[in-house]
Image (cartoon, rainbow, N blue to C red; front, side, top):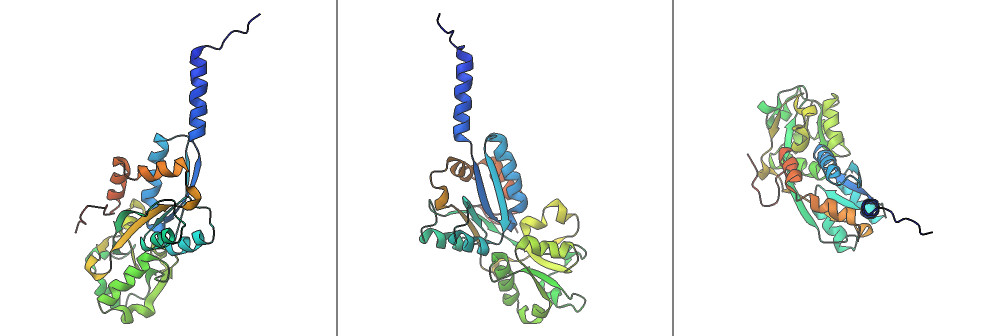
Length: 259
């Protein structure tokens, strides 16, 4: 007695499931803290289009991620707030492909209690302001740019005693949000998020006061040949992803910064 063949529709469905299973996977992304809100949204819409893929994002300091990747940390993609870090990794053989620029960042003066939209950097010398938060310039690109802006304005020595340092730009914003600092120099991408924008205004620091915050990413050597890593990297060029980045104040490659 011959065994009946499975219906073609069932066979086709099984083949499709096996194909999707083979393509799906998990990646771990190391991302600069200024990307927190924008990247969370991008991951959400990416997963809607790729339901079988799992994307885990860890946010922190670009400089620290750079060191960790050199030490073998299991990251598949690395998004840095300073393109110099991934470029160094690529030169040292830690990248699976060339470095790709993804945005220019902007810095702003922001406060949860004061109307920073009516302030400039000169207001930071006011005796009533005793604590000013910036990211640590030693390893956080936004902290380096904050220092450059203050030095360009001739204010660094005057405000140095008031400075409190965040490990990354997200922690810096948290210091201001919780009252541990009265004002801070933070990423525009954080200041425009409803959680922060509802608390206080911001003042956009002129970009001629500091070097450009050119940001870039790599697929790491660990993820070479990883289809999910490439799929996610390519998705950053999609219209939905670009729209999210623009909404959070990032200037995309080839575009002009809004004043």
